Image 1 (cartoon, rainbow, N blue to C red):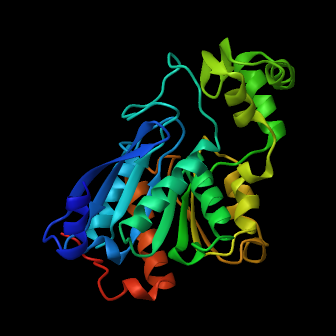
Image 2 (spheres, rainbow, N blue to C red; image 1 turned 30 degrees about the horizontal axis):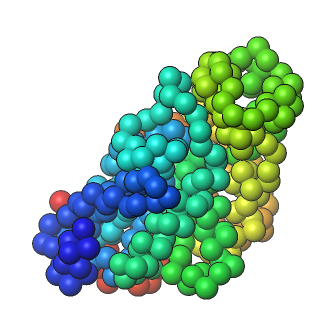
Amino acid sequence: MRLILTILVIILPLTAMAVEVVLPYRGIKLLGNLEIAPKRSIQDGVIVMVHDSLLTHHQDTINILQMKLAERGLNSLAITLSLSFSARDSALTCADSQLHKHTDAVLELRAWHEWLVNNRAGPLIFLGHGRGANQALWYAHEAQNNSRKSDIVGLILLAPMTYYPETIAKAYLQHFGRELADEFDWIAKSEGMIRNIAFLGCESTNVHSQTFVSYYQNDSRKHTPWLLSKTEMPALVALAENDQIEPNLLAEMGKNPQRNLIWRNADIVVIPNADHNFADDGLIQLVQRIDEFMLGRFERYTHFYNLNPN
């Protein structure tokens, strides 16, 4: 693997080159797909991509975006969060044990960041979708306060996760017929695995007590609009007009008359008729918005950005 990466630093491939990366991490293996654009090296910079809840980097939104970015001359690293499984290459289901935490992603992104630094990667942009957008922002926000601030230059947040405690509690009761506060109280006092519990999109699954607490404990940092308001780096926030997963985002960010004051460094755009995954035409419009963001915010890309890919 190190030999391949050395080649990618020194020799510019004439066609896009994909490299499967296996990163040892705390006794398990993390998986990622490094896509090097034609005539580029890893030193030209990398967009680090984080998938939505319980999925993998093979998620259509991430997979297609990675291909479109390579056509434009942009390198990317799409990672799969472990969710406590080594070399995980398929989405978690309700039949799987839930042993992960929302904040595990922040630690894994730190490991990927270190790997990129060790392999002499150029400037980094963190891109995330849904929950992955919040996790990417969370890590980038923390990184602002350490010595590596300068190599993370921007963010691209796609239909980012929100966290409204009352809305989540109402949805939990509506979908599962149980009061979230009651469930949280007794699970928070428990230790180990809890069997047959409603969790995220699962009506019944086996969940570690700390997992349940991590996902349902109130924390302002889970609310992407709030965390973004505390973050200085340039950001593109793409909202889906017909987002059924995050229906409140449009009102809070897209139609907020104060948005240029609250999110001073963010370009907030609404993709018409798009669903949460930006399927079909939504993805075409999303890529156009990314083009505008990259060329408008980062002068270093203008000399090789390809707006007319084959």
